[in-house]
Structure formats: C-alpha cells, structure tokens
Length: 89
Length: 357
View 1: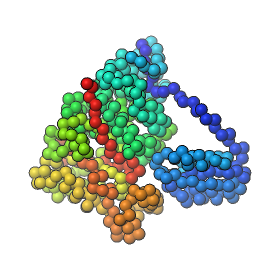
View 2: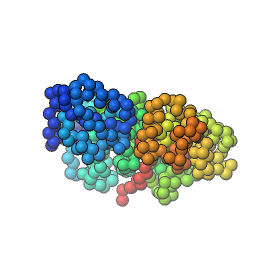
View 3: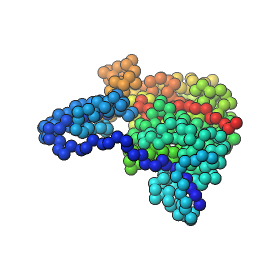
View 4: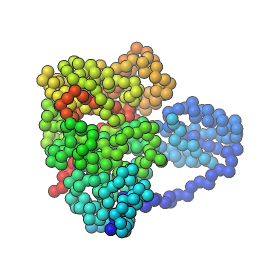
C-alpha cells in the first residue's frame, strides 16, 4: 500500500554556521536574556569574566515568551564569538 | 490531485503502523494510515488547493498546507466532514494573539483547547454534554487529535526537544469540546465574540486541564465556590493575569438565569470578587515576583494596581472579559475552571468554520 508522509523533509540551512570558538579565553560572548532571571545572567557574566577574561555583551528579549526579533539576533551575532540564548527558568 | 508529500510503499499493514512509531510521526498512539485515497477525500471535501498554506507552525515552522493538514487529520481519525473544523482551529491557533510558539514550548502545562460552536457541532455529533472533556465521541477525539498531530509533525512540538512542559497533561493527545447551545439560557461563546447566532465557529484557548468545582445551589453559593477555585495561588493567572475559562454545566446556567443573572453578570461578579492581596501572592516567592515584574515591564500588568502596597487586592485577569464562560457538561453538581497560561499568551481566538460549497 502507498501512504503519504505527514512531515516535511528536514530543512537544510542556507546560512553557514559560525565556527565554534576554540576557547572562551578573552572571547566576546553575547548573553541573550529572556527577561526572566536577570540575577542569573549577572552571575554568569561575572563567572565568564573572572575565569576566562571574556567580554560579555548583554541583550534582553522584549518578551520572554516570543522569539527574539531579527534585529536583536543580528546585534547579538555582530562581533561575538558565541552567544548564549534562551536564558530563562 | 496535485500532492507533493513523499510517498512510501509498505507491503504489510502492521509494518505500516510501526513505521509511524519508528519515524516518530505519531504521538505515542497508533494512527489511521494516510493513504492517498483517504487524503484526497479529505481535501476534496473542502475543495481547497492542496498547496494553500495557512501559515508556518511554530516552533519548527513547517508549513500548514491543506495537504499536510489532511494527512495528519486522517492519521487522527477524522472523517472528511470534520476537516473544515480542523482547518478553522488551525487558523485560530496560528493567529499571533494566541502565541502558539510560546504555548508549544513553555514549561507550563497549558494546551490549546478547541471549542466548537454552531449547528455543525450537533450535525457532526460533537459531545457538549455529560463527560464533555472525556472520551467516547469520535468528533471530539478525531478533531482534537488531528490538531495535535499537526502541531507534532509540522510544528515539531515534541517533548524530547522543543516542548518543555514540566508536567503537561493528557490533553496533549486531544483537547476538543463543543459548547452546549440548546440547554443553555445564554448566548454561546462565539456569539459573545462577535459571530452571528446560528453560525459555525471554533475558539482556541490555551489552558490547564479542567479543575473540578463542586458547584451546586443558589447563585450566591455557586459564585462563592467559583471565586475560591479561580483564585488558587497555584494558577498563573493569580500572578501574571492573562485569561481564564469557567465551564458551567447547564443546570448551573439555568439556576443563574432563573434568578435573573446574565452571563455578563456572572463574569462581572467573578472578576470583582476573585482577588488575592499582594501580601498573599508575594508569600509565594521571589520567582513569582520576577514574572509579575516582567509582565508589568511588558505593559501587560496594569499600573492601576499598586505593587508596593501589601494590601492591594489583585485580580486574576486585567479585564472582566478575560474570564471566558461556556456552558457544557451534564446537569449535575460540578463545574470546572481551566486556568490559562497567564499574560504570556494562549489567548482565546475565534475563527469561522468554512463549510464546503
């Protein structure tokens, strides 16, 4: 018998991923906060600076329960070796 | 008919059923096999272009084409005459006001309830009476599951990946009811929401499962227990507002109406009297406070409530109209409250059901 697939074929990204940084030492890291738990992010920022000398750029989503707007993603991407996103509870 | 989905040839019925488990194309239950004949019958009934898309289903963004929705509707056990209801529900779910992206991924246990109104509910034998949230009726089960399978296969809302619900609840399999409109003294939900009496419509609202409310007696007695149930400190609404749903049974509604209470009167009373003091909700902890602050920053928690005064009496919704009231179930002692997700979304959205010409 012939049946039809209920899913779409897996999408392939047309945008190459950034290469992962080899080390966090001295790297610039973007932290995108879900606006839920700012103290957690503040602590994370301190640890990254203390242990790795990392420079942290902080961003806050306008809503913790909706996707980041494209301009925020681009701003976080700009000049950062990596980003930590989806910081919430 | 121009269908673009991958075709899979399987010789054996049992192997075909197992294939859906192996590929994680089902929610944990077996499915009706989506053969081309069944899928074409589904699409043919609504007479729409198979490649018309209702939009991208979050979080993964698969396009909700008529063809893919038909395949998932067949899998859920729907018949062609159920398909217009499924499509209306999907249109409602994809309205940005519902924030399906958040509903599908939140740690909260809300699931989008589908409420069917209008003559079509009786014609297709949707259950609106005894056991309304339960099993036993194909229309409720099949439409409910068709919607959930579409969110599963096209939206990618699966519990080992994007669906972060801490506990979830069994409505993840199917969550569809009809409102009782015959044994009901009040205007039905879709008419309250702007649709003509006698029209067919679907409303979606993301909520917890039904909480039983032992609700019987005079209006004053029923309101007393409803107020207490709506204002439970475990509800998101108490902390971050949003919307909530009250389901009264036909006997409850009849008793209210007999004493001259309109649905709006009941709603206004519940909104005015379901309150907790700021001191009370603050005692729940700092995290709750953080969420409340986030909602105020987002402009969703009205400034008229002083969040520095411990005696401030806080409501469960920002406006009376955010307390939705429907009539359903048997004529008995029990009502239900179904708290929402809070101010984050899952809000009620209503769409008309387009019957085939």
